[in-house]
Image (tube, rainbow, N blue to C red; front, side, top):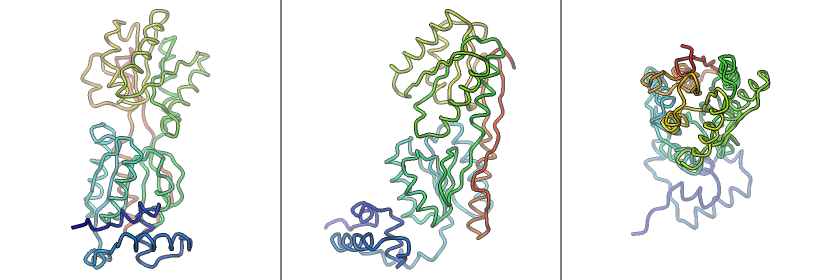
Length: 335
């Protein structure tokens, strides 16, 4: 028996979003061109798509479900955010559906479409930025909250922290502690505003301190890229007192043991610091200097925005910035 065509099949064949097909099926043509309508109609006829009668009957009912897509569910930032987000939604009577994109744009798109097909009433996500056109369209239909990503999308909300200011502050404090060289380890920042802002903050501190920036780009899961970066750190540390500052806790987790294996005494010869607060930061000796992001506050804020919107209340602030704090610890000689 041939497989029954789904709304996702129609959207994929027509080159449009599931939301657009859904609007077509419900006779809401105001935001689509005649060409788009004709194409969807042709694909529906070609595939023999028939909307599920039960689903159509249930469409008017509320699912009281909200979707959340994060990059890495084991990452402390994501764990803290999801916990606070779920708690806030639960208090308002909503359930949370969670998925992990692994930072892959294609997988992210599939997850969003799956959530839409399962009739979630709102979505919060750490987006790659590659699906912004679709998210902008979706935000016209339901509350969409971008988490830790400062993309400017009409009708969507964004919650983040003061990445540039906090990054500038921690880098400046490293120079102020007497580290002559601060090596910045980051993943490719292109297309990710969070990474760009943290890099710019580091560069700001270098300009103020009159120090030459040393930026090394690494790829998580690629030992060769880390080997090259750590060779540069080792070379710097043999010449001057050096600190390593990583753009996030995942980068630090991948390079922490190799850094310590270089043999430079921490914190006297080499300092270690990171944006984010890994859950193991207090368990190593010395504890790691870090930028503490307000993950609980961000999760609660996302929950409040979504529940307010779903109650029909107006939410005026489309971009919310919750400040981070710098925690100087033993890994840099202060704490």
